[in-house]
Amino acid sequence: MIICVVGPTGVGKTKMSIELAKKYKGIIINCDAMQVYKDMDIATAKVTEKEKEGIKHYLLDICNIEDNYTIYDYQKDCRKVLEENKNKNIIIVGGSGLYLKSALFDYRFEEETENETYDSLTNEELYELALKKDKNMDIHINNRKRLIRFLNREEKETVEPNLLYKDVYFIGLTTDRENLYNIINSRVDKMVSNGLLDEAKKFYNMKLDCKSLKTVIGYKELFKYFDNEIDLEEAIELIKKNSRHYAKRQYTFFNNQMDIKWFLVDYNNFNNTIKEVETYIES
Image (cartoon, rainbow, N blue to C red):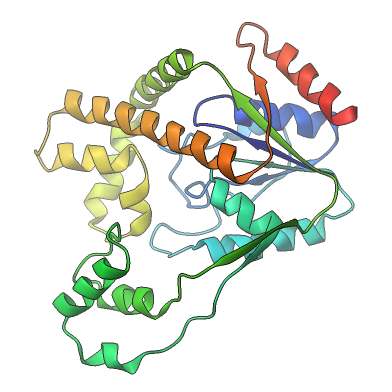
């Protein structure tokens, strides 16, 4: 069977996935879009070797930060792991809902097409076209190669409602909003005390133009601090704010896109929540 553990950031997905893997003698597949990158450990709250408790994890630390790892890449890689381990129980854990949906549902991508007219355009013209295609596009104006690739790629993906796999359980962990926000705020403070600034500064000093670095909450805010645009206190508060907003977006996606069985987490005794989930699966 395949057990998908989803929910907002900080809710307890990692711990639940470990316990379920131990219970059902399974493996774990990461479904966090940023945890596929090496060295992005603190900001992404990546599971540690100690936390893994010897459980085999897949699709963690599989590419460098300079790599342009796409949802299409994840779809191929995740389905490959699923096929190679089809006789095992598999736990997929993470908050990247679109990645999960692309792997398990009939989600199809159009092939890239080559448009040679882009070769004759200036960087400024390419940049304007890219913004027209997606106003939230964040590719640097001087990254000509990526701009052309972005424009060549058809973004019309289609998804059919049917699952491609049998015996799939969608487990969602949740808590009330006030408690979740308190958890997120405390988590950010812990990240800072665990060395988030040093981790971000290492990447900042590399001066890389990477989508991954611009996307991770924790880096982009601290980069503004390193650029003297805001002070440290403002940067930390911005990390907390953006993390809370991200959690809201995660709820919206999972509630609208998947049939999730939600469980209210008992943080006083997490074992109670584990037992509830196991009872649901086994019934």
